[in-house]
Amino acid sequence: MLCPNCKNQISDTASFCTFCGTAVQHAPASAGTGASQDQPPMQTQMPAGIPAPGFSERLNDPEILAAMKRNSRAAGIFGIVIIPMPLIGFLIYSRFSEKMEFSEALKIGAIVSGVFLLFALFSAAKRRMTKSYDAVVTDKRTRTTYRHTNSDDKEMITEYTTVVRTDSGKTRKIVEYEGSPLQAFDYLNIGDRFRFHPQFVFPYEHYDKSKAPYLCCVSCGRRNPVTADRCEKCNVPLLK
Image (tube, rainbow, N blue to C red; front, side, top):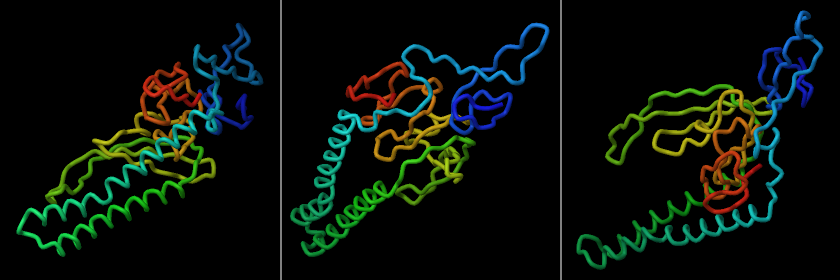
């Protein structure tokens, strides 16, 4: 059958379109005649407070843009404060301890602060280079792996992988780990169509909000009911 939204050919038993993500509902068979093969599927009616399938038009909302500027400014201030801290700490240590000379403290502190600066610059450049994309989740899986701790011992952790297929046909893997926020793995299910917004704190947007378990604020990451219009914590508009 054809998708009622994008008109692409999809399976007769599909509950959603694998091309655009539109939810479909099959018409019941007529009494004594069987189901009509030519009758188009009916779109699922959205619950109250949940918009029809589609991506939000609020990306350029003034309140969201202002929230992004505040976040960027706060990150900059944090970087200015945190980057010189190793240098300052080593200099203070050499001042009150006989175990380290001033020149040695200056050298080590400068190296550590330089590493912090390079990491901050690399992270900022990576964010600017990351592009938005649309995709459909094709698989989800977990596995046990190991990572090194500060003492060089190995720690067993769980790795969560969400496999997606982008509209350009590329396969991407979103890898998250136990102990960190599982943004993609918790929010997206197999078959869900979504859009990735790299500029937001929570970067994933459901195409069909009726399938979303919650709506996350793009500014603070707070989980909100899918019927909410604004974040319950910071009052920034949600992507609806």
